Length: 113
Length: 113
Image (cartoon, rainbow over all chains, first blue to last red; front, side, top):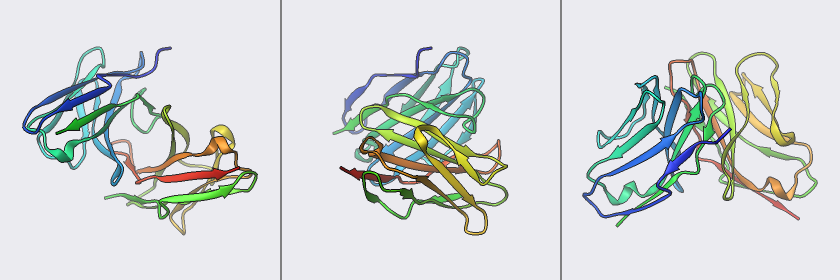
């Protein structure tokens, strides 16, 4: 069974731009969660989607948004990029909930210049 | 709101010695507790979880964790450390199926040959 895939793997953007990251979960998994990983803050929860609905949201500004499609694939969008948005963005899929075992993708490394 | 703390940024252990990676949590209600590991260049992987039942939970790669309700702790342990155990370890906590999972900032484990 194929694992969680994330595209692109690396991105370089400048301040003020926007970016869209994509995540394809493991086949049959309906829950997709997004996390931001930085050396100082560790792993911070962004949001979780289940059956195209946002189930939970972390404490991030409205510039961070996401969606999930009917095939469970998910996208995350960050608008008006700031230097502090530079991070590794991880997507995780699970069968029904993040309370099940989560399978993480390799991440998208975003650098904002 | 729930929170989780990993009091040690780094732990150094000699190969063959027992290891402990500490985690404490704060929740309202019964906790759901998890350990994940991030190996270099291999992404985050699930190790084990505690939902209910026995306080000693066994997981992957010979790891186990002990749930201690009175001390609100969920320390990760292994009887004999391997160099290959060197990685970044994350503890995570949730409270119920409708709430988000919160990750700690991570503890870097170095196993010295």
